[in-house]
Length: 376
Image (cartoon, rainbow, N blue to C red; front, side, top):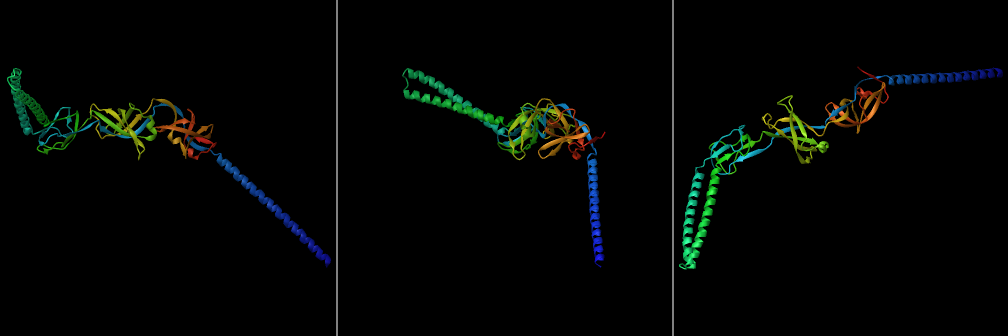
């Protein structure tokens, strides 16, 4: 009985060893399988990473470009004058209408001058009377002076005639001033254009009663215009009087007009952080009209050679600007410094050389060293 029990115990121990050995073998096989699976995945990932990315490229080049500033502006009259009456009265006639061309000194309007002409005539008559009184006083003074020398009249009599002579001379001066004032008011019943230009607005018609200071019409100068536009704060440092401005207007598509920068305002507009400037534009044929909307290009310096790349090639990461170039068959990341924009191209001041191959399409899928396939 005891021997049988010992035999059973040995068999149990043998079975346990076999179970342990089997478990170890299974664990080893599982580990091997897992390792093999991980290795395969890594190999697949490596193969995936090495797969070429399709891109399009452009060859960087050096171009001779002239720095400029682009803006939107408006054409304005070079000068604007308000024509007003300087005397009261009934408007006899007005000789201009809106849009009428006028020249300097041309008659614009007339006020009925009957009253002013009569006042001028009265002033002239008063002057003549004063001059006659003066002449009489001068003759009497000469007689009294001769008698006074011979002591035939008293000093009191001589002083009286001297005083009357002085008063007569004063009367003549006052009469002259009255006549001149009356003639001046008479002359102001005719109103003339103060400059050459065109009538922008007419406010009165014949028969209106007008007072001193009444607005009759406004005249603008159109043979010379102002092109008013704004320049952003970052471009202000390049502004100089005399710089060339090229612009176009919708009324004449495909045609360019030119002007010269003349006025640079002293302060920026706080809301827009821009500076207002004005260019002078010759308009001899009156082709351009005040109020035209203009697309302006202001050249701020001479032409210079600079490396450019398409704007579409640039990637922006916070304050960093970068692009990808192709070296061999792999992508290389380049941090660059940019300058001015010239249409569809951007000036590259640092980080790129002429003739380097720049990725313009597909760069968003690239990383440093990734193989690329250039699409043709």
